[in-house]
Length: 245
Ligand code: 6GU
Image (cartoon, rainbow, N blue to C red):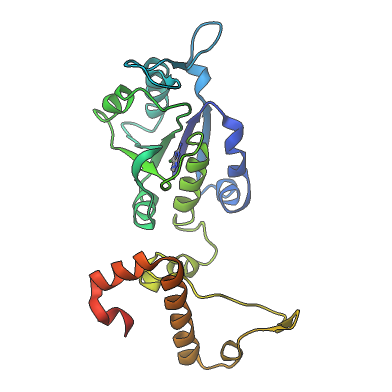
């Protein structure tokens, strides 16, 4: 899978050399390319922003700069390959495991990171004439730019690309994946058995898998009810009381 990230802060994407994603890149499973948007800016100042029409605070990133960048990056694939363009913005649709899984089966993603108050709206209107475009948000709070969100998207997607995770079962058991049916994961323990007077729960040390499964399910329900009651509501809406069988 190929992923291009366009940003005015390429250094912000340095973590993509590390850990799971870094290893997947070196193994040839992911082709991640980070581009400095200023390459497509002109003039002595290489400006990428200007004041918004209609007034208001802050600056917007300009259409000519983003247009030139996206034209070149999206034309750099094989033959007539067309990428899916993802644009991190707090005005986007919420990132979900389902969306990440959908993107993980795409051959090519391009992430356009905005800064300041965002990107001239015509950039996406124009891009939509040639490729699928999605605006995506991490949640209901405001970051200073799209770079951290791009890191999140790349990591969430990459670990679902076949071969990237050593053990594919770890993805299936995650909270929000199909396996645990929309509940948060139970707490987990490893050796030592006793640490600072705290013991690993007895049931996990016995070998009874049915009892372990039941215990984990109860802890999942408890934790979900405490911190994400909305997930329990969604589960009941989908499956009714049978969700708790
Ligand atoms: Cl994707 N971008 C920015 N700038 N802020 C955010 C966000 C994205 N998601 C939540 N807040």
